[in-house]
Length: 440
Ligand SMILES: [Ca+2]
Image (cartoon, rainbow, N blue to C red):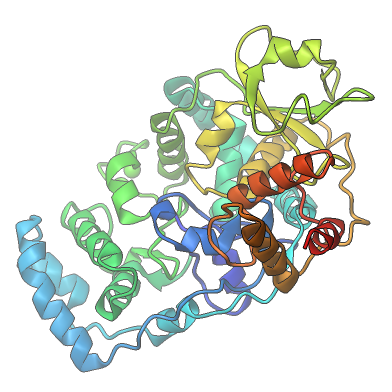
């Protein structure tokens, strides 16, 4: 559903978001919407697991679209729109007289300039401003959030945190015309038929009368409103909570909150269950024995001496996975399947952890007990690419060679560390790069 990355673009004056990007360290723009397009390559560009692109994604720029091409595209679109149940009146109201938006084409080609470590991203996610605004919104929507939680089974603070991460609790949802953005990308042939298909769904949404064309606004890649749903996600998951007959994720905060809860519930959120916990690992804890990213029963983690950081009792049922997003010297977390469900919104681990930690803070808990290893020397994009190339040379599958260390690369790093007799924490710092160079 969503694309993220928006925040990133915003910085450069583009109000859009693409797949999961996150902005890091900037006032409100921490991340964006997500999921969906996970099949699209963009997400890989924007959100790479633990390192988050902070500026622009390394992407192939879409081809420019002339007005003549755009008009031809619109003419060719009509038969398919009609088959999808779109009336001529709706079609003309949305697309008549429309011109391509060159700024959308430009955004697709922005290059990634650098990557920032996860703690910059997390600090932006739980910034003072975001917590204060979130607390105010929690009060304002207290009763609605409770009812939404009761109906959909999703923790109200997680719903609130997603809203905060996506659009700063409805403060910024993008001001571009969704139809124009999608039509421009589709006319360009960018990413195959993805944007053309989304455009037809956007027209169906207009046909159903949920919103007027001029108010169907969002980010450059088509993520709409306060939930940053792509049209196809809107169709599947949007909810008319306030009962006015319109699924209005643009200007109805309660519709947006309920739609987010419904989205998470439909993606497998386990009712009344947590996303996970910050944990403390005991002295001598062996990552060789208890490798990260392997699911184990909570009781097994307890037997290994792992404790919940705030002193609460480990659950007696259920499974969790250890994640070390900044390696063995950073904070450690046991995450449940609900953490994976947050990733349905945006596939980035950094994003999911941002939502999770923001939700905890909004629920009134203290901040992290563990400290981020801020003194670490971290690789820039070029050095991250070098890390990937070394891993490939050694024979590991790291996914896409893009200078972003994602989950596949981390898995490869853990395998390399294990072979080299190091603790397999999967953390890509400069010490790892030096070790890889010596492994030649
Ligand atoms: Ca409504």
